[in-house]
Image 1: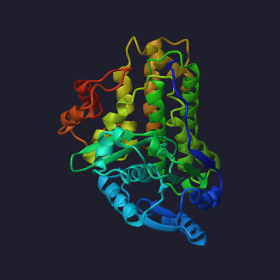
Image 2: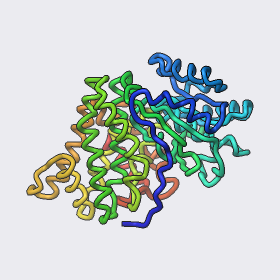
Image 3: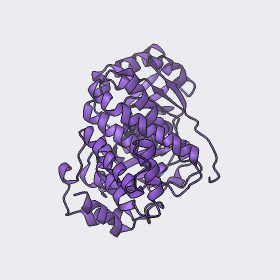
Image 4: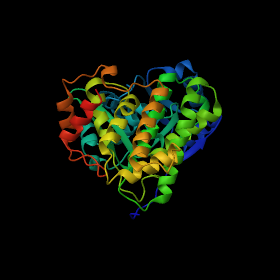
Length: 387
């Protein structure tokens, strides 16, 4: 196991009615808030009314940045920074899923940066300070409520890039599973795939001594498998929603990756799909990951796939190793299909015309991953297999 420094500083308030602590928590940082949210679902399910009423009752001044896109755009970040500077905002509050949270993170960092906010996405070392960030989570998917990362899209350059810095970790996050009751089936499915994909990136690793992290990873994967479809079919099943929500946070808050060499190949590949075609991130991951698994399977990686098949999918350990590995990959595809997620790029309107460009751009920062290193040609082969 590799050396690591452990720090997950976000304070989590988990469970029913935890929103009641919101005003007191905000006032620890100030009383001028930028409220960031997406397409308006928080108004339909009354979370907006609850939050803004609490602001008014507690004399917290607030300004709004509505309409943050599912793949949050740098243009929205720039608007948020302008509002913050014009009104001397003291805390940025994201109410929503990962898109609103990621947008809020770069707004908070951009407040103190004199140049264009896109610079912070291209080079996280330019993030020296950030406004405090808090979240009220309404979608179990990205885990952004408890990590240092953000992914932002620039449609002008067809780039969707991740950045990260300790200064943009949320100070606190409110996780009430009832706030996900109204999430539509397709978003619940995509969110479940997103959670599992975060686990895969840490699980499929060359670090062989991280037994504990691997067993925790398998538990989160089994949780998603157990509750993903249940949450779709029984949207107000508190047990299912609660387990998925907590799985979302634990999948990517570094708990699984501390002490390990991690991958993050499929995510970089999917970012290109979203940058060029603006598809849902979890959908793209559900399409790509089984094809990545097929490509990554070889004599050197076989044992990890065997562990995955036996410990996650319950396959017979007495079977021939490659039979277990291929069976596990097939089980993965079947599970995503059971969530009504597509299996091919063609199904989401992606053809062959931009694959080569996307493959080159996916590897512009260098080789992807270490478990199964990918150059542009490798990425292109996986894209073509996924057609």
